Image (tube, rainbow, N blue to C red; front, side, top):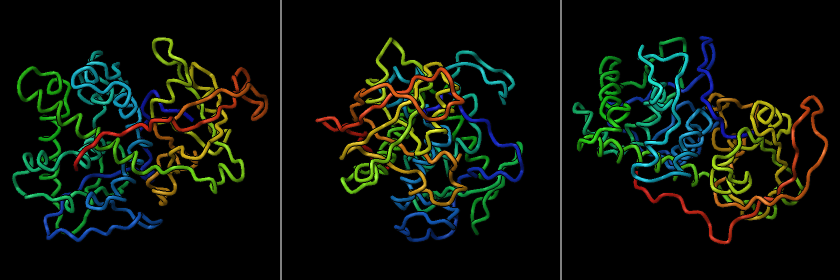
Length: 348
């Protein structure tokens, strides 16, 4: 498994579950639950730190992984915006695709805007929403079914009406999530870039907080269980693959065949068998998002490794699924760096 170079296609089947929309509750906000999401939960609250971490994991698996990784590797106040991956999607909803526009902004639809808003600064949200005085308890993400161009508005009893909700999202997107807004030399452009950086920093901080160090009692240590990572692409500038992986979040799978598939699709064509050592920070996606409907692809058995690990090549090996010929297989030991990587310090 690897960080994806492109977004997954949106589900078109009416029956396929997908992230719904942000709901802004107009009634008295409920008290924070301060509990982990369960198998039956379909609503995540920004007021609950565990939910925030779970949604950062969800965002990473849902398509924000490319932006998160790019941000971790290239974070500066201007450079990162100018180097977001560009190109042209086949399904451009503006009717005027631009080759110089980052892919993430070309496909910024309601689920993406909702996810961004979930992590955006509260002061910014209140500057857009003139109808309500918002607090974190108002900001929730609700599962809904995604069918074609229509996403139902969650009915949470007292939520904003659909027209008012859509007006809020469009106003937020126009001010902060368009290419022209982010590139503007006007004060509004500087503000949009600050909101962008703060929001992605917050997402990264929550994703890091969702991880925890591998303990000696872990099956990865005590029982010798392994993870597998399919390297999809060659790092830019000739950087060594193992060095590159040490500086970013890394997606892996407990299923070797899943990682084989990612390696087969990529240009690097490498499959890494990862031997974890104590102290490496990881999170199993299913542990924080137990309801499979929160998972983009629950069958991937995904595990996310935090940045700040040393990837040490041990040996080349044979084995695994023989259907994938031409894949270079390597055993790699993963060990924490002497100086741990520090995530951004942000305030929700």
